[in-house]
Amino acid sequence: MKRAVAVVLLWGSLSGCATTGTLSGDDPLEPVNRAMFAVNEPIEKFVMRPVVTVYTTVTPNIIQTIIGNIFDNIGDLFSGLAGVLQGKFDEAGHDFGRVIINTSFGLGGMIDFASDAGIPRGQQDLGMVLAHYGVGPRPYLFVPLLGPMTARDGVGRAAGSFLSPTQWLNVPTRNVTWGLATIDSMAAGVKMLDTLDTAALDRYAFIRNAYLQRRAYQTGQAPYKTSDDEDLSDLFDEEEK
Image (cartoon, rainbow, N blue to C red):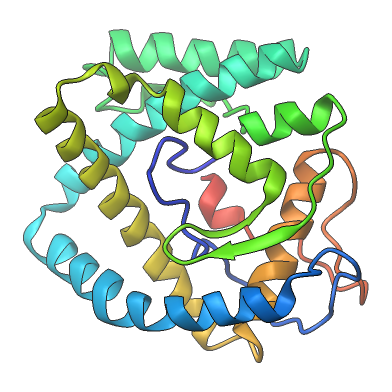
């Protein structure tokens, strides 16, 4: 789970080949969702991309890496807690081990020694916890700025935001932290969108199908396949690194 505590979970973290297949029944609000997707397009073009361009231009790469590592470290903590709630103790152990190593020896998470040591991320979140206890995902939603989600994942994101350690900070510090998290996620997402632009015939359908299939895979409900049996196993390789 890349940038798990970011205010924005960018739908731009998608890459790979195009698909226009429909996951039947998963998108009953498609007309509304497509309208929201259309609203989001100029936001991406005129807000996200200029902000990311400035950020990546003026911020040294080492600082970008440090910022990303810090938020990933917080995300590993959430992933560990989510793993415990699902009884996935191996994954949770890896996540807590990562947090201990990176916090203790990585200067509060600025350096990712755990990845260098080969300790995997558990990749768990609160939406997966709800799925584990039988909460269904539908309907699919596309929300401007927030991107794709299911109703279940939306509840998980809201709970994660409420429980985030940033809530303990004073307001100015918290706002700066949220801003950095947002820009960090935007930077990662826009890079993937550039690949998506050259691959997808229908960006809305591609993003929806890839998102739903990834979540189905993460919750143990399906392999990386679309309704047309197209293999999507490599879609999120970049995000998981």
